[in-house]
Image (cartoon, rainbow, N blue to C red):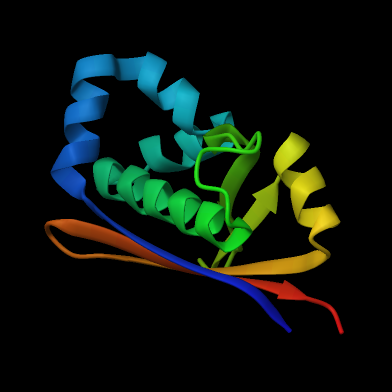
Length: 127
């Protein structure tokens, strides 16, 4: 059963400006070390960071929280299977919140063009 649906779109140059202005401080506040390693090895690193930003925002929307209720960017980790499919891993108080909401899985899809990155997330509850 669907518990929540979230989508987000971000201008890639907005994320690029944040990285340029704030460097590692920004990256460490928003992205896990695993996400940073993944993005840094990509040819289009900024696009990868922007896609993960959009994915985290979309996941927050599925939880109905935005930035409130103890949800932090680094407690939502976007990983990739060997096939390239993105998956969501929740940590800390964000994982606790999802458990209270009886969310069993959050599906995510990420896409980007030259100017924008977008993501859609669906939170599912086991029936």
